Image 1 (cartoon, one colour):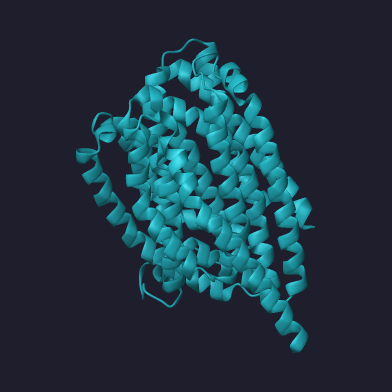
Image 2: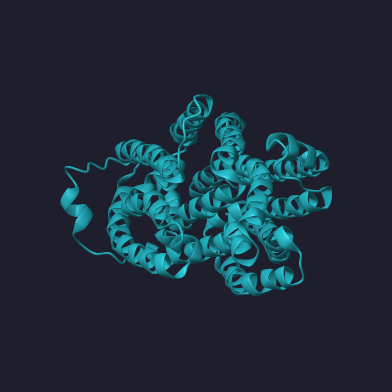
Length: 425
């Protein structure tokens, strides 16, 4: 059953990832290489916004999984209501940060109109992004994936039409279509997730905006927030760091190569996310034998992913050349560095997903804090020594190694401890 859900979810996500990859050469043609570098930097900011749920999305995911195990979503509903209030307040904070960024960050300053079109609507509907975690906690990965594949599908159809008809479109016009499609998808996910936990916006409107904000689960959420922050710094600011330390063309090169490897890692993470819910449900039911089987299966899938990644790296330069129609040329040495990074990420998350489901994340949090402070000076060191677009992945790889060892060793320790307790009881 787990493999069926993983396979179906990965297939849907594969379609979405293929569409995203196909959109790159079209965008390069429409926007130019330099314009695409700016587009990549601005759209990456949207991913940063998810950071500001302060980890509450992951806490809710675990609570919904427990509700699934017990066939009672009322605790999850109450937690979602309290978290929604918290995130409305956070929206105001994000908006203030964005206004400051418009006047301090060069790529935002120089592209204010496009920045506002892409980012402001996402800030406004930020609380509704909780819907994705609710669906994941309820094991509705396939439903979520089907909804979220629609925006890239329609977006690439739009790009193909304007390209085929040779319609001139500037970045602002493309941004309007892009953000509108994604907002519709977020609303749709929220509607389905609300129905699952029995939340009615009309009936529960007063509860959503009145009452207490801070609650016990916030402590768990803050720990997940620190993990999210580390992940963002290590793996999501590469385009921005590259454009700030080199130029928009190098940033475009970085983004293209990174997208190729993120394509595979995204599929891997989708499968691992299914494991998270299964682990949480099994933990609630004290079924440690199943958790052990899940870990072994997880390790096998991770090993297969890493092997496939290294084999692909030999062909990656030729693929990228063909994919971008000769606009982006890289060598095997560069692709292997990106491969090493995503392999380390995959291995680390294979163990971390068990710690996240167990909510044993204190040491992960300490490693994250170290990585958070180390990422900028370490990557800057490589930029200063003319490593160019591979500066960020080298730094991120080095900082991921401690997580690889700790997360997997501790996951095994927790599983063995649970099995031992089960035998003694």
